Each structure stands twice: as structure tokens, then as C-alpha cells.
Image (cartoon, rainbow, N blue to C red; front, side, top):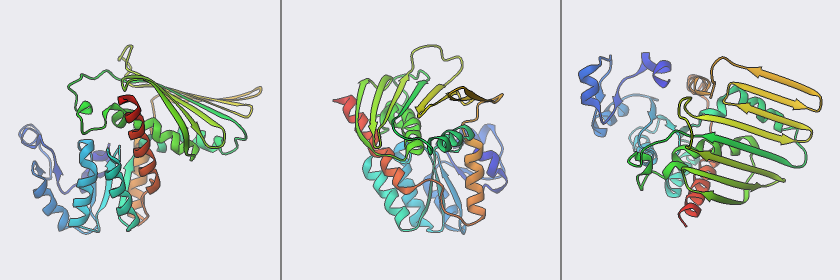
Length: 291
């Protein structure tokens, strides 16, 4: 998706499969396999946009090196922002110094997410949020399971942990975990009488890819979101239903917002404090699972 938005402006790319890519595909820009080579390109451009979509453990240190090399760079990190709390602190401190660092949690940008968030602003009293997610099966040899990648909690669950933060803006008071990082339920107690649960499993058919069902209940309102295709809002006897032909998980709007913010010299969309909030909570969940 980012290639679609920026393909006419790409100066260079970096990929560990660069030799194979150069052999079978032709692009109008060089594709490097050494980090040092692309750093030379970054250094000579004013206000470059650098998109980092590497192994998760590389996100923070690569961002720091890019900004050390060229402080005018705008850095966009494909989720997650970081794996370790220490790396999240590095990114937070860079943001505090004025660095442009944005984070690619696409579901924040989805239209249906925005509708739900706006509706929740009118909530009074208790709120109950349920995320039910069917994840894809991946082999145990997948790099998500490497010891330095934060398991599937950081690789996958982080989407809905981040979404919980975006929808509520509240802090977690307490949480508990049942299961492991492939098939589990996490229960959250948040501020202001908000209860939430994230139910994640890779059991079942993979035919339709990742499947999501959200249900939010507050006041006299029930909101149901099915796979980012269908949104239903029920308030007493009134029902509003929105449907889309295709899933819209916010990727297009995310990159459009990034491009507009850069062209208009605006700051990053993603709040710096949420880098810490999401990363620290992911690591707390991982700790509980491992214990």
C-alpha cells in the first residue's frame, strides 16, 4: 500500500532479498541489501520520508540511526512501534525532542473505527468491549516466535491492544490472561468502569484470512462490527446498519493521512504516549503468559 502512495517519489529501498528482487523485477530506483548504502541516500535528501517495515526488533534502532544520520527525516514505522520497553522509551524520547515518528496502526484510521469512537464519547457509566479475533495459523519456525520479536502478542495482538487504547483513552487497572499467545483470552479492567476482553485464536478455518468481530455495549446502545465490512448500531428500538463490499481496515486512509501531514508540514498522527502504553502493556501480557 505504501508503494502505491509514494511510488513516483521513491529514491531507494532496502531488503535482505535485494539480489533476488533485482534479478526478477525492474524498478526505477536502487534496491540495496546493506543498511549502510541506503543511509548514504537518506543523508543527502532534505526531509526524506523513511518507511520502516522490517523485523519488529529492528524498528527502534533503525529509527534512531536514520534520525542521527538525517534529523530532518520523517520516519513511519509499520506496527508495532517497538518490542521492548527500552526501545519504546527511545522512540518516546526522540518524539519529545521533536522528531517526526509516526506508527502504522491502520485500524485507528478505518471509517468504522472512527464511527465507534465518536459514539463512545457519549457513553456514561459502564462500558463493555469484546474483540473476538480469528488469527492465521503460522508455523513455529515463523520469525514472530523468535525470542527477540515479542511473540504473537507483539506481532498480532498489538492491533487490538492499540485499538482498545484508541477507543477508550483509559488506563488499565487490572488484567488477567487465560491460554497462550496462539489461543487465549485477556480480560481488562480499565478506568471509569470499562471492562474489555480480547479473545484471540488461530483454531479454525484460515480460508477468509484474519476475521474480526467487535461488540461494544454502553448506555442503551449496542454496537456490532463484523470484519470491517458491516457495522450495526442498535439504540433501544432504533437500528442503523452500514455495509461495505470490501473490508476497510484503514490502510488507505492511514497512508493518505501520512502523505497529507507531510505535505502540509504537520506532525505525526500517532500520540507519543501511546507508544509507551501499548508496548508496556504487550510486555506485561507476555510476562504473564510466560509465568
